[in-house]
Length: 244
Image 1: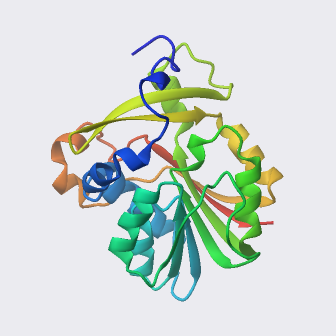
Image 2: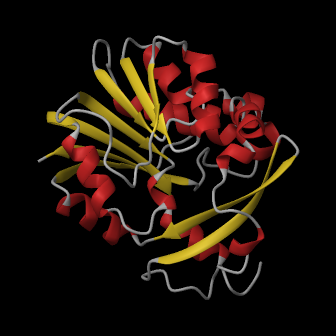
């Protein structure tokens, strides 16, 4: 590991999902981390969504939207990557409300338009959560829920042992998605900074979860799961927030 967690950031355009959208989708439609850990956990936390209007914020190629729609939700989604939105349209069909939009900017939805919002693996790309959380709060109905998934903050400290856990810090990591190289750049923040941001935005933290993967992960990924005798591993942190 490099001594400086920011040292990789210059090797590629930050979080340029347009450049590797198809490879990312192919990889993560069947991967342990996405298909058998993140998505099942989101579905479990969402519970009964039949008839509920759900916004998938940072929808990517639409896999979470598809899983929620299969359970009766009326889904809409947006992503900054035009290529990802194109792939989501292929998956979900032309009648699904999918838009190119940036979570860091005012969102193209009416106040109180949604019962639930899912922001999975998107906030950790942002240094400042103030405006994004305010917008997500605005588009939720009274009593609505925001389900957030971000990098578990301890992972940064595990990779960069000399780093300051309590500082909000930028760092990058390299990945290979279906044979294609990519660099993703994140902002680490400690757990208390996350919950403070949620409270300041008008949310009540109802659930903080470190879920296990889906049961079938043990059969499909025996070598990887053999490393975790408890059946669980550290990767992301899951929150269910309620409008206060």
